[in-house]
Amino acid sequence: MKISEASEQSGLPVKTIRYYSDISLVAPSGRSNAGYRRYDEKSLQKLIFIRRAREFGFSIAECRELLGLYSNNARSSADVKKIASNRLEDICKKQGELQCLYDELSHLVQNCRGDDRPDCPIISNLADIK
Amino acid sequence: MKISEASEQSGLPVKTIRYYSDISLVAPSGRSNAGYRRYDEKSLQKLIFIRRAREFGFSIAECRELLGLYSNNARSSADVKKIASNRLEDICKKQGELQCLYDELSHLVQNCRGDDRPDCPIISNLADIK
DNA sequence: CTAATCTCTCCACTAACTGGAAGGTCAAGA
DNA sequence: TCTTGACCTTCCAGTTAGTGGAGAGATTAG
Image (cartoon, rainbow over all chains, first blue to last red; front, side, top):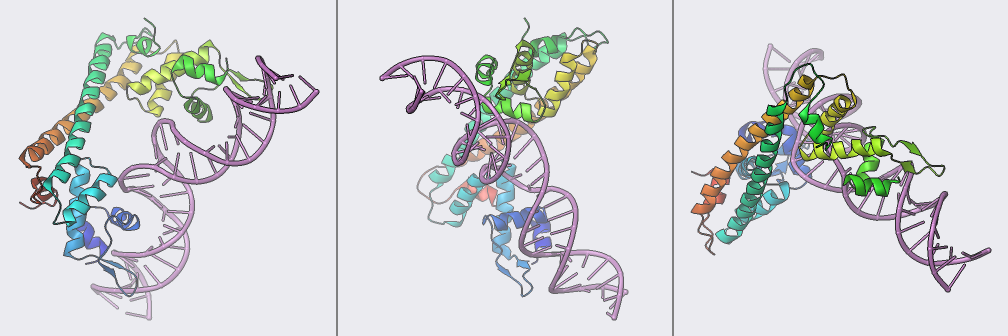
């Protein structure tokens, strides 16, 4: 199939598929005489794999690693679990940070009258004025 | 003060302060004969303001806006509250997304034996195999 | 045959810096 | 006085993960 069909089937934009081809993440299965990229079932599956992994927030580097494990029937599930566990830790950390931010900022917003007067605790706090 | 002292006082890297000067976010208060950037109390306060706003996750564009409101004694607290409320919404949305990711991924990780066998539900799921 | 659509490559741009090279400035010590 | 080292300058390149567009060639429908 041509790139536009691979795009439809995988749910990735054409531009992104070309980009993945450029960075050798997912190579097309071949090229037509005119130089058009061709994708078969196998390369399409890889594109779908990458789309899903990206949706899980894995970086391109991690995707590359996971794809290697995906294509390698001899890999152990421990290898995969390790990458996924690291990602889980990242998410946890990020969640904690966001919660802190949320608490602090919502506190400030609640204390701001939000009227036409210039006095504003949000600005005062950002300016580090106690 | 020179840029290195402004860096120490503000908690921002020298490179970042130069960058903020380049993009006209916080201009130095002047230049020495040799062309060295000089920072006074006022510009230092702005740097600190930006650092804190960035820590709250405000974008540079939002920082620019907030800085305008910060420097403008005639602004209403409503203006500030609106920007901060938008940011609060962003955080909320991000939190929801992260929670979804966390639940899905931790489910997969829990179901992965993590041994030397190649069978792995994480990979299977990413490959969209039911 | 022609017009529309598709595809190609290449270049530039995004956000918010960071790293490094090449060169100028300044204060202290031998 | 010279020199050494720390500090400062500008400019260029790279980071992440693409996106947008130009210009040119290929394919397909009518």
